[in-house]
Structures are given as C-alpha cells and as structure tokens.
Amino acid sequence: MTIMIPAWVEGVLSPVEKLDAHLRGLRHKAISVFLICNGKILIQRRALGKYHTPGLWANTCCTHPNWDEPSQTCAARRLHEELGLRDISTEFRGQVEYRADVGAGMTEHEVVDIFVAHTKAQPVIKPHPEEVMDFDWVGFEDLARLVVETPAQYTPWLKIYLSTFADTIFTDAERLT
Image (cartoon, rainbow, N blue to C red; front, side, top):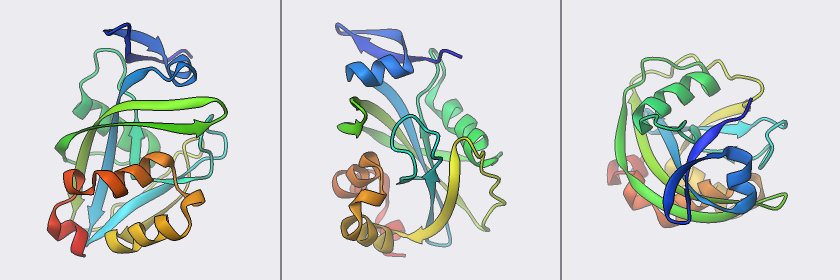
C-alpha cells in the first residue's frame, strides 16, 4: 500500500509517497504524541520490521498525517493503530521542526504537531506487533538521563524533543514528576 503524506516540493505542499519523502529528505508534516499517567511518560520500542530506526525507543507514538487528514485526527488514529488505545483526549502543545539522519540513507525533515495526553490510570496497552515491540512508563527526568547515557537506544527525534523542545512539549509540572 502506498502512503501519501503532505510534503513540501519546491515550496508547495504536495502529496508524496512516505518512503520517497524520507529518501529525498523532503520537509513534511508529522505528529507526535506523549501520553502521561501519574508522572510517567509512555514510551515505545519500535518493531524490528520498521523500515527505519527499528528496535529503538521513541515517544508514545508518531506518524505522518495522510493527505488532508487533520493532525488531531491523525494523533487519535495512531494511538489506536500502534497501541490499541481509544478515547484518549489529546492537547495540542505546539509545532516543532527538526531534521535528522535516521539511517539507511534516509532523512526525517519534519514539521511536527506535538500532542500531550493525560490519563488517571494506566490504560490497557495492546501493541500492534508490526509497529511496537515493547513499551514502558518512564518519568521525565529518568528518560532524559537514559537518553544521554545510552543515546544509541533512542530515536533521533526523541533525543531532539528532549534536548531542544522540552519546554514546548512539557509543562514544568510534567518535567518534575
């Protein structure tokens, strides 16, 4: 199945095949979600079959919106597709942009709408095995420390989010727990 994502080609937003956008390093739209419960962030380990960054730890979920798909709709869709979660209300925290080498000759040049969600109790996680091989709940300070101590275990975008955009993504209270 060919997935067409919104990417800028010669300054114009156009539908581009997802793999092609990564191989060409095109600037394209994306979403990222951070689910927080009792001061812990849900992180996931990407399945080994993913075409880039397999086996690395990432934020709760992320993807590219389909052509003409609103970002918030995409965030809800991806929480369900990757982790089996439904009815999680997300809050838009802002938009960030980064460029990162993700290996195998591919570059992520993403304009990312960031969403944060909170739950009072840990939901039942049902990871889709083609997307997610493991998950964990980690406090912000512990996650920031682990990313610095063992950077090879984490996706480039998670490292960028924590080192460059933590103030945009997380409130002071979310970082202190």
